[in-house]
Length: 289
Image (cartoon, rainbow, N blue to C red; front, side):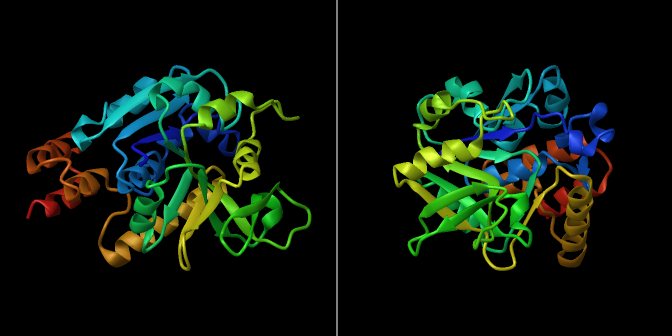
């Protein structure tokens, strides 16, 4: 059972420059909430209550202003600084003490996920005992992504980063579940030509052991990498449309905690006071009725 999760919220955000010159990308708004709310909500929906957020040097205070230590959500949030981005697997080296030889989930801070049966899928994924699991989603342009090829049992038999030619269109998204070997395997990796530790190299270690499985968002599910300008605004438009049409909020952290009975009405009322007179607070008030 996976009880711990890491959100990688560092990086330079160069694809969104100059907007990101003064603020961390994950603190920019996706519709009416900071981007960081969305990956955090995914971990919370999975039932994960111990969370490490890895941020750029000198930015911890910015995240604490909005998320604090997670107590108001019935969870525990820790922070670690990353001096410079050295590839996704570095998250496990930085978070070694946090992981403490246990299984762990990783989600990228700029990835957005939405699907009707997502909560159930996530709750099944945290039951992982050994090996690793990746979330896959079909894409129109495979050469822009890391692409996985599966066998009939949903075992990953091939992983290629930005392939020129491939029969598969299944992209590896920014949501992963790993067993306790992930720290050891990450430390064994050598930097690529980009001088970074590559997530594909880490996943290949599990593949060679025949311990890499795949999960899917399902038909009608949405996955967006909000780290580019176009996808950032597409994500905002998507969230806005869903919330206005269906009347509920995506990634409302207090609602998730309240419905899971991690917090009481008293904590919910504190949240309303904290956010002030805004639409988000008005939505939280509806939960009290």
